[in-house]
Length: 269
Image 1 (cartoon, rainbow, N blue to C red):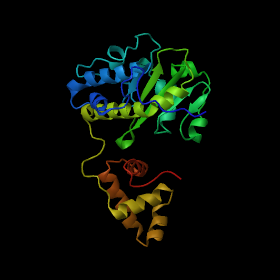
Image 2 (cartoon, rainbow, N blue to C red; image 1 turned 120 degrees about the vertical axis):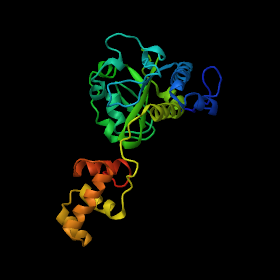
Image 3 (cartoon, rainbow, N blue to C red; image 1 turned 135 degrees about the vertical axis):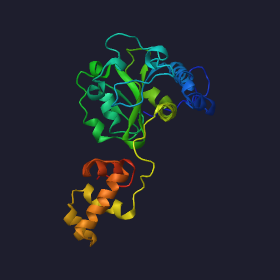
Image 4 (spheres, one colour; image 1 turned 90 degrees about the vertical axis):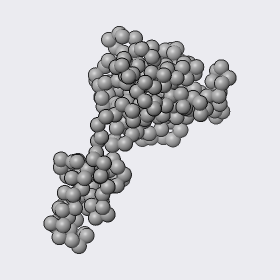
């Protein structure tokens, strides 16, 4: 069945607008609570409650400038022991966070499966056994937020009615707009709150360094790379070592991984 995408919220206000995008944007620490409140109100207007995570690998959850937990103080999640932002294992156990590692576009999910505009075989292979207890929701629209240096954030939009588990119409109506608001909030939150650079400022790789790493990424040894490039093995080692220094990597594998994070090489098929 084809659903027409809704362009307004239930209150007839345009769902996606520049003023709302600006409202969820964080320009300074003192803006965090205001931006979170704006995201909260957008979600509520569509019948959802937002659950933001700035880094699915981090046990911490987004906070305001004073360190107050946004999930509790703004988004209205309770303090009970099962609440998602207090579960230290959710990054490993939840099928929602698992899916965010393999998908960059919004999707919705319930115990019956993942639902996207385009199919994703990786998501189809995710185990959904005991879905409700592992995901801590019966259904959700999820926006993965893929960030520089391989960091992954996410915002889950959970229906206010816990018994409403078919989100097909809501996904087509709100999914794209939720994607814009979630990415804006998480990316700008991290830009303001992130104080440690993942890489040195001068991390640009040379053409030869990239070429060596491309071959290293598919398992070629230094000797094999030297034969392919018609260079000495010492020269290959020199280029890979220089790349590791520029990327602040501790070994060959991490050098390849960081180069892939920055888009110099591909680890895909």
